[in-house]
Amino acid sequence: MSEFTASSVLEFIAEESVEYVDFRFTDLKGLEHHLTVPAHQVDEDVFEEGKMFDGSSFQGWKGVEDSDMILMPDPKTARIDPFYNRKTLMLYCDIVEPSTLQHYQRDPRSIAKLAQNYLISTGIADTAFFGPENEFFVFENVSYSTQMGNVGYVVDVEEAPWNSDQMEQNLAHRGGVKGGYSPLAPIDRLHELRSEMCEMIEALGIPTEVHHHEVAVGQCEIGVKFNTLVAKADETQLLKYAIKNTAHQYGKTATFMPKPIHGDNGSGMHVHISLMKDGKNLFTGEGYAGLSDTALYFIGGVIKHAHALNAFTNPSTNSYKRLVPHYEAPVMLAYSAKNRSASIRIPYINNPKARRIEVRFPDSTANPYLAFTALLMAGLDGIQNKIHPGEAMDKDLYDLPKEVQQDIPQVCFSLKEALDALDADRAFLKQGNVFNDDFIDAYINLKMKEHEYVNLIPHPAEFELYYAI
Image (cartoon, rainbow, N blue to C red; front, side, top):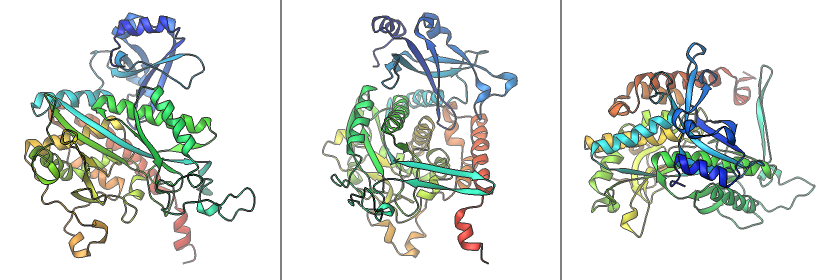
């Protein structure tokens, strides 16, 4: 829907009898919010002056003493929300400082726009394409507690092996632990739900390409088309919105939490990336797996800055429950063609024009605006400084001898480690004033509170290990 302008949005509202307009924006953590106004309140001034809101109500943003901010709608993002009963048009917004009318330096979407502009200013490329694969879980029931005398959680999904001994309404067909990849029904009990999710995603203007059951119990994936950085971050938020709300309508619950089930695979967000200039794919070349030197240097930058990147690409304490060996989790910072045990994979393709890399360690707790931007900045640093990633690793990295594994760098293994790495390695993010110290410090402070909160709560496994000692 990129043909929309402010005037054509207003015409669309009138012609389609739109009743409400939803202004949407994303906070530091990646959670979406919205303000809804009657359509008759939206005129040309709204697209020029924006909509005021209170920024003090969001973690990591302004205090009450300086709380006013402006939502500036982007007309190119206009689309009808298929979930509301009343006809509602949604608009994604940038956040603007009232005093300067410049972008708010802690607004994730504005930061992603700065990254796109910086890319062009380098002369390296004019377009960066991103194609995330957002895996997710669908459950029947989830309950949890962090009360003083009651800490724990219960997850239930109909197809789970732990339900195989139920005596009532048990139809038996189950994939088992790590046995859920792409089975037919009746083992795959989520096919119809995923198809309906695809319909809703398409209704939001995002072309879908494939859907299937993933490896773990209740785990799914819906593949969608790639797009440019900001547009793809918008679409990632829309995809999550559509999946969660469709599941809710079916009486189920969907989560993008990386590791909700102990002992089975976790969910990732594998991110496909390529750079273009004047319509030419800069990652296509004569090197390893058909890659150019530009692509190899981009990989080198991602590997060099991977620990700092983890703070954005894996920004939850739960992220590091997934990043452990033997659950198809890419913990080794190496690259390889086709090898899914490497953290960066070069997918096999028939058409060299579609050459790309796939960064496999991110997950969907990431704020997509920040994660995609950070990955781009790391890759550009690799290109600018000709950081070669070394030789490719085509062996199964999960089964290497320990003495060999010790020579291969690995991702962070805790959120605190990632935040400490970001604190120490931030210069590449500040190039072109894309990120700044104020934002990075605020982000670290916000995320460190999550680490401290989780670290203070006794874990059920600690009762198992230590109660009787």
